[in-house]
Amino acid sequence: MNELASEANLTSIEAIKAKISNVSQKPLDEHSAEFEEIHNQMVQALSEIDGI
Image 1 (cartoon, one colour):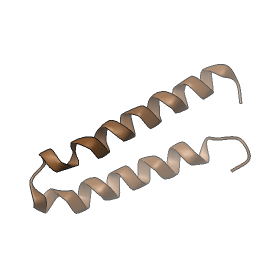
Image 2: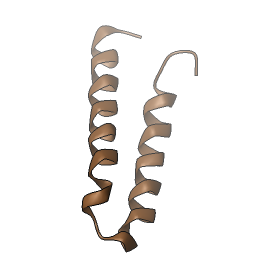
Image 3: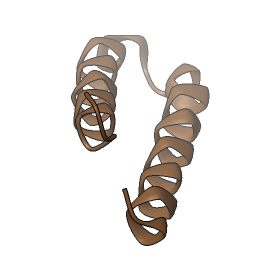
Image 4: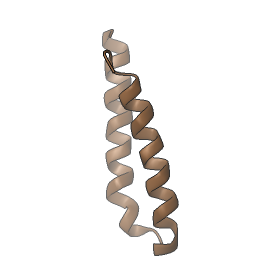
């Protein structure tokens, strides 16, 4: 993986972590959809890592 791809992936992961931290700020009935979106973003970020 080149350095740019690696930095983009780290930026993506940091954004995902921020979303996880902010879930509690959202109404309870939105949590499920938010976690589903976070899960999809995590799957995409992990699929971009070499060897996975």
